[in-house]
Image (cartoon, rainbow, N blue to C red; front, top):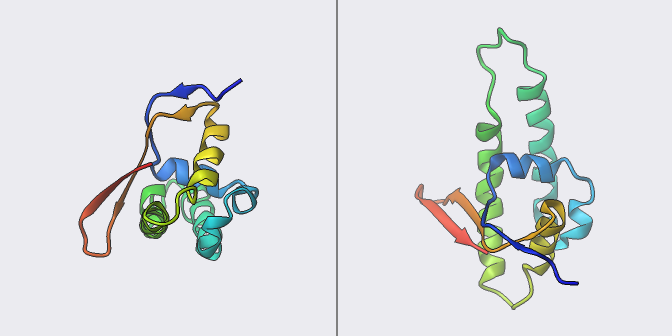
Length: 123
């Protein structure tokens, strides 16, 4: 039985937070290991700066703001993998498909490139 093809998926800051909370991410997608230290730090910062913040916190961040630097590095890495050998993104796509319960027809990753422009990556 094959994997059901579903609608497109926008891999946004909340999806990034969800996968960073999964300890199995690095084992299932070893291509992302260069980002592990920063990914774990990003997850820690989300928990500490956003989720545990008090209602009266004036300097609190949002999940989007905390994830943004990691999202840029992730987007750049995925783009580099996409341009490399075929199959380098298979583990990432399979991981997302298992988490969602279907294979998205397209996985869209938006990120701000090092030149400051918004980039769109279609996987």
